[in-house]
Image 1 (cartoon, one colour):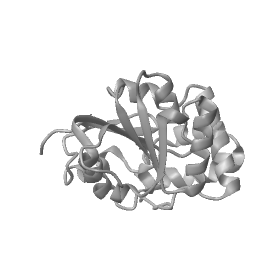
Image 2 (image 1 turned 90 degrees about the horizontal axis):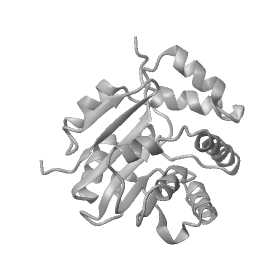
Image 3 (image 1 turned 135 degrees about the horizontal axis):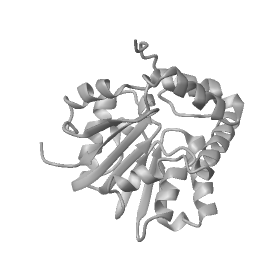
Length: 221
């Protein structure tokens, strides 16, 4: 039986120590090839100007830029610490000229209608205060035919998989945050019901061993 969802923070990850630890964890995921880069590319997001919501340290968006040509990225995060860190990491990648990081909330995206060719996010959905409102905001800022890819952990993963994630998470000090994120995550079934009342209804919802993804193309509704 799936446990009741326990909401986590909706203010992002903040604080010098926890941000540094989270950066270390994300670097290890990147270096092991465990980021969502391949899935993002396979979703059809390979060109144009993309928005990354909840970018954190920025590695997914930066890896996306690394694997695409002529693309640009706008990042949006609610955390000032992550905002600063992503800018530093973009400079390390040599992508400062292809990135624009801004602070803001996914429920009131500070961008014009039909502004982006694509919108993506990984690992932030469970922190959104109003996911359905954010889904409508994503639809609003996408150009017609623009693609979206939203992925996160799934709360109904097996105890075996959550144990494997616990043991593989480094540094170990960040493991408690992993558990609160899993408890705050959604199940594929919950997301299907939520999407039905938004402009992203009809999107493909897919569940993996530890994650769930929402992807599709902006169509008139």
